[in-house]
Length: 460
Ligand code: ARG
Image (cartoon, rainbow, N blue to C red; front, side, top):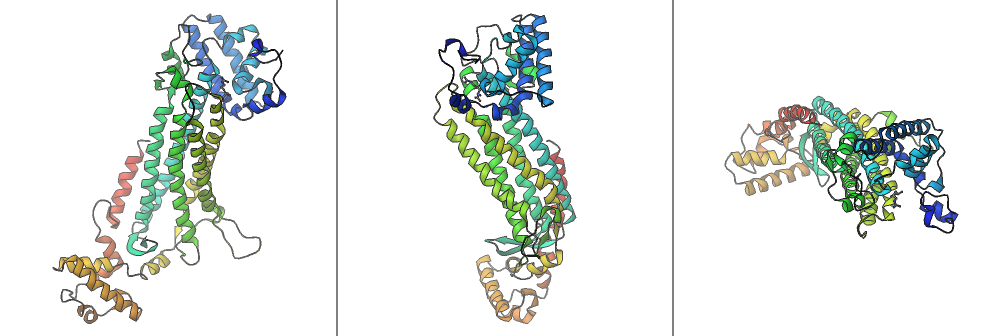
């Protein structure tokens, strides 16, 4: 009664609402190219193992290429009655080449087929995302290199803490993104494993050779257990988890750009092409791109929760629940890719307002720790030095001047250990230059960090 491929044992047609409710073709047609690539490899393997004749295999592969051409030309008629991308492609194949097309599904199930499609697709998207990350990071290295000597206030608690190099701050962003890239590269290894050959859940009675299929599809390994291969989506959860951490980083960077663009901070400008105006307030230039990226991080976190929740109660092996893995994963990939595209162009093109950053650094007694360290070098215990400098800062606040504006006599009243060489340690340049060790903000250290980073980036 049913026109479905599996209609043999049914005595009435599927309810039309149920057909629409259970169909996934509306979204999984995004896998068409990968589905066909997987089918071509599967058919080739069946031929090599003498499960199908080489004539049949040639006919099937030619037909699959025609189906792909129709899809790419936008001429393909997708049918909800055929449920998903897999059965749409197979049905059209049989239309084109005749009954031989019905042999393609030998030794295979949609369960191992869909798991293969997701992995092929996600592998490609992961590579694209890694390439965008590398582009963004190399742009940040150029920016950091130009600004090893640009001074800004470093913050803790968003209160002025110590002077830092703007290039050093940019290199902190680089490090976050570098770990994100490593996480994705690592996740890619577990994405890149072949489920095909697991069939529905238990394997197949045909003498297949999965190493052939794995090699044809460029998988670096083969899923070792058929029950696990068709059912787990942990590789997608792992990707989404790495994507969430990455979006969390992009969101932190966004927050800084947004703050820094305000008239009150006035630390950076971002190019007009990444901003929008207000329909009522003529003076406005709003940082919409970073604001949106900050907002979009929430979506990706949500998709991670969706996938974890989707997986958590499923008994082995495949369950239809897993059809719900696709839309969250697509949304995660699209949101992340869009955010990275925007960032790769925007972030390396921010311009620091050097004068203003410098003026801001002069405001919050950023060199107080330098004075304390100076006292320690002259024999004062650090806790005592802390107290001395606290008193000096209190005087500065009372007189509305920086530590470097107090006279030697004023400073000496707090400690005998202060000599006339003290002022060189109270300058912003002196403060930066003094932090001269691996990981420190001294401009020459930042230069070396940039050059090491260029080499590190080459592994991706
Ligand atoms: N559309 C299905 C999915 O996305 C394909 C696998 C269907 N398998 C099945 N036994 N109904 O998961």
